[in-house]
Image (cartoon, rainbow, N blue to C red; front, side, top):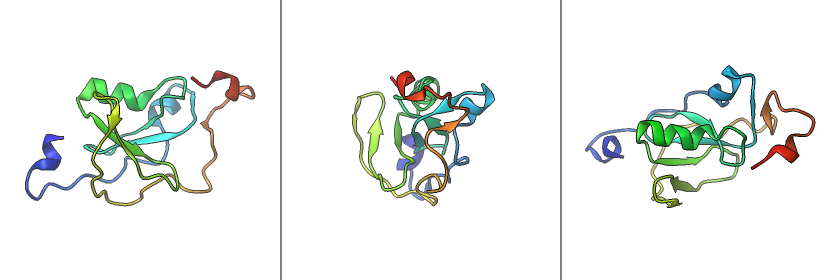
Length: 114
């Protein structure tokens, strides 16, 4: 998180409230994660495509936080361990009224979770 450790650096707001990567593929997600460095919103490891983890590996942005209402944990994808909490600009989660799962989930979505 080199950008966040620089004096005066501020993390960006989230880039939307859905997994755009899933939507681009007409896919679906279970829960959402927010990249601490760039604000990318990706689907969780239980989702079929695991876009948040893929984003971390592709960009080197190792830390994400939950983007689910009522959750406030941070995760380091490279260490597969909890990460230090940092203040982020709002919103802190997807809207409460947004459905779970999101996107184009099939009727048997529970059977498809990882």
